[in-house]
Length: 425
Image (cartoon, rainbow, N blue to C red; front, side):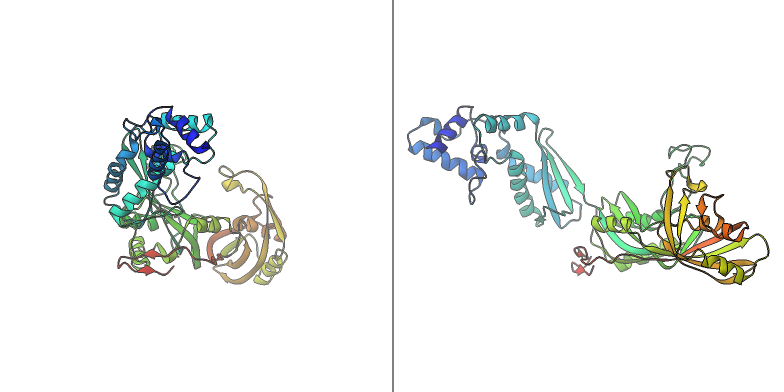
């Protein structure tokens, strides 16, 4: 009889609906909905002859009739999702403080150990109804959309999950930064320094790739996550740089990668080119940004004085396999912390001479400052080619020709294409 005694104590607080009554014991058993559990408890108590167990007649003092409006909320969510392309969904809600405090008071007063919060039941019941209305499944881990019901305001907020595409890009034009740069003076507000654009540069790799994707997906934005970055005045050639582009809040989701790739390449007009390899996810973003791979560079170096290719090659060999100590370069000290970094030169050699300049290839650890490896940066980088030769040396052009990338063992979940088939990752 201990269970019925607890039920009787709950009923003393005021009128309570079957849903809220059943939720007080929601985790004690399975197979019944909370409304069925609450109704069964009333019936059992009534059979025992206790008038306090009479069926509910007044508005519930905890939920204020919320569970009588589940279909209404399901309709609101379905309407809020109209026009958005998705395959999976998840329902959430914001519970008014008074409701949360009321149910928690009962749990505490009566030492209830297996209650289910109102939020959990609401989300589950509305989720089932919305799924039936839209034909889309609930996904608790990686939903395409999350619909959040504001119970106090009677409104639904829709959060659209981003899309991620893994690929490689090539940058053929110097003077283009990897990502958008706000004007240093106005920080994006617009001023005379930036011609009231709010930008340091008119274009970026991020925008050249992202602009057509924003239009195709009817998205809010596109954010590029690269495996490192090249200098603005450097080209990205060779094998290209691995990246993941994040498409923010897309209204459409079902597209084939090959046509997307073609659209981006046409739009970029030869300044940037991409290959889209597979649909990605946020975990791969973390991997690509944290991986410390070796990178290979092709540079033209101008050296003061008369030096032969052999003399330069001999000097370069003293740097091969050596750990270079690099204090934050003067050219980036305004935006990076001032500290000494240790990076290793794996391979370095002079492969030719062009217009009295030396063509040098360098394979080094990620984060190695190549320009400073050559110039010495007024002693901030040691050792350096300039220091070994005892003559001023400077990079006049730089191209990145190899960036290693991690290939995930398990590819992200496949995505539906326009034809309804699942494209390979």
